[in-house]
Length: 187
Length: 187
Image (cartoon, rainbow over all chains, first blue to last red; front, side):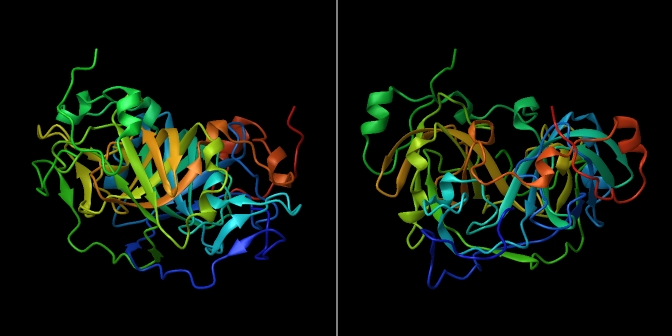
């Protein structure tokens, strides 16, 4: 994170952001990293970065971690608790040029949820040792998932598994909501 | 999603899950997909799947989308609004064997946030056309980010950018919270 809380030239903050009351989150753990100030954090996690710790709280742990040991890479979702939420245009270089928040991976966003894919080095009780984080020490944990690229669903097949786009032309020219299409076999 | 709301043999639900009041979310848009029932959804999005639409609401749109057009792949975060949140062990195959929720990509989790990486086909006003989603029609949107594998930070370098693990042995043997390490040049 590379800002305190300022609004820079070219940026735009909403005057009255809608209240964040559509759904509620519960913090299920805490990330322990070497970085105690936003101005020291890496901009992105690196695979050979410092070893960090993911502490998972009771009553979710230990059951919720059963089988995690077998994973090589884990997707981590966390709450960027120090981020403002009202900027729709941002200037990461602070040079007067700005772009939309959804075109940036800045921690400042309407729902400040960070995602990382980390390597799992080991487990000590309800704590995981990982590499690849880039967030502040003490960041609240929201979720852990197997990295999608290494995970095969266990559940039985569903009809949607076999649905593919009819043709790109037909699909992209359809106005409004796409209606359900009959399942088609994927080769 | 492949369950209604049942608890299966071998699974474990918390008796009294902590309340989800640690942070609040605001729905910033809506996903339009062909799937109107959880039992029809794909288990995972596929790159050649049906074209879906991501509608971004005002007052965030249009500013927040500025520059998104240039992205080939986008990370999508959404709220799995139909999921129960109290299962810590789950049996995707419903065969009596179960594993921890954090070792599964099931939509049922303490904070039911789904993530997908989709291909961006186009933009029509405040709506994006994408391929690769697997969720229910009407799913609330939480966030969009450039796919991490295609994004280079714009912000100036920070000290953490250069921090690497000292040695794997030293790092993994350190008990408790890892202290800050001085920056080291990455080669």
